[in-house]
Image (cartoon, rainbow, N blue to C red; front, side, top):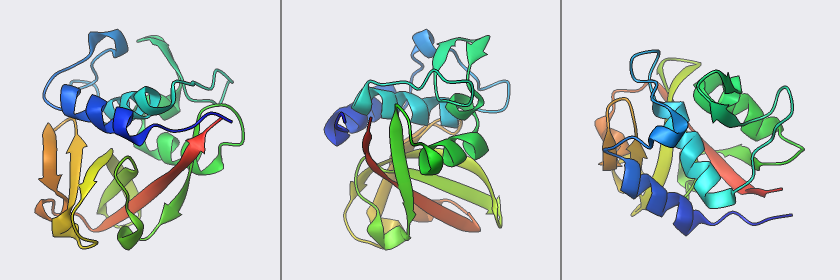
Length: 159
């Protein structure tokens, strides 16, 4: 089992929060770049993709898994992954740690936005700072979003 380097994932998030790493394409005009950015951060922290048919990988714009660029599929992959790549468990907001993933629903139960937790100053939404794409953000308090529901995916490691 490989580790998950939270510091590397966070450093990547800070580096690319307001820019695009063209090695991973740009999805701003085709649904948003948030899950792509989140996946890049996770990859920077773990270095292992899952190349299976229902895995988590990016080769190019035409050859990528739905879980690399889609919030719904990223959530499903991370909490269900028993193979290579990152894996996670859902936790309450109070369980957020730097390097974890957040998912937001603007309509209850339908998660459509994701990003990386980059700092936790306190367990309430104003003290959880995030980085994300689509509306590019870094060190943005979670409380500044008008979400209906938020989920934290605590990254347990990388296989």
